Length: 167
Image 1 (tube, rainbow, N blue to C red):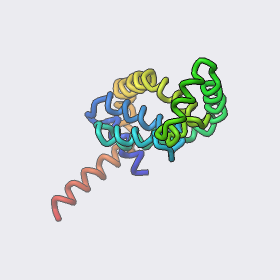
Image 2 (image 1 turned 90 degrees about the vertical axis):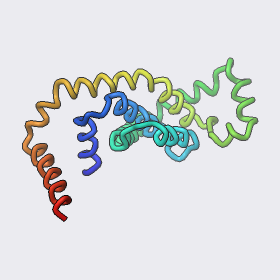
Image 3 (image 1 turned 180 degrees about the horizontal axis):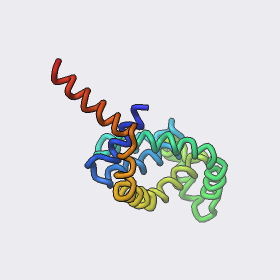
């Protein structure tokens, strides 16, 4: 529950919408691709090097992990198609004969299908998430702040700050 509270704080905060959109994209890539494969180490490295919102990344990761189970048959077919393209056969053979590419498991149809799909949609997804964050802040932020629960959470946060100062 605290993850969602931090997520909505990030949406409502003064944080740049591009940082939140990038968090969504990285969470999308982590969620759509199989988790325990080396290509996700690159994504985690980007998470640590770039300024991203971890709660937005985790929300996107959880959401897209659920979607990945629905899309796995499509990723499998896409990966099978990629691996059986006649024009790429020599490339796949050369890459697979190198130890690094064997470790990356790109000969697995679901792995290559999901990674290539995630990378292909990452740029349009970034701009889509950027538009959604800006739209949320412009149209829905004021409406959301009218809810009593939101005001209570903001009041509880203020009470915690004051309580911390009194200790």
